[in-house]
Image (cartoon, rainbow, N blue to C red):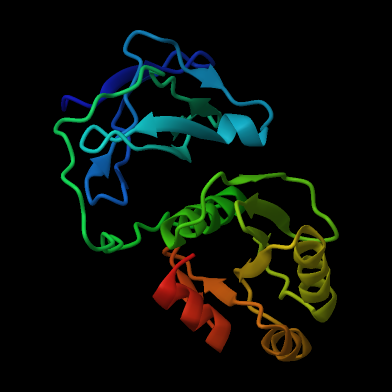
Length: 230
């Protein structure tokens, strides 16, 4: 068992697991690993809320606090377990020196797509990688897909096999216009021709999420957003 791994017992079937949390890339370049709460009991997930999907973790290198996906584990008995995380703040391992130039973004770390939730998580992580902060969202479909917002942007994520249509593009664009923010769309199944044409006219970035969990730009506004970030 590694230093970051913890034993986990499923409360449903009593099966024992060894869980190692994933590492996420901090903008400073250091890996961020959610600190496991050793000895705390895992909980079976029966319903989901956005606030429980994310956990605040401080980078041990620079002290920056960001939100990352709440650790979960699928048990062989069919239930999904939420793994407890310590909420104590980490102190920086060193005092960062003043920087005269922006820190290059580290490579995006994708999340393999197995479920609709994975697609939403991948899109939210990509928004964070682009530089958007204070990400929040809802699982309600309105009128389709999942809406996620962050400081300065609203995103439509379509995690189903239905291509995004013209109405979807116009709805998310109008929603962003009303809030005076930008907008962006993510889809697993792509976009109808009319939707792509309208998105180009409105300068809405469009991304397709491949099965590795990596969003790929499909129009010029998306290429520009990926190159410059938020």
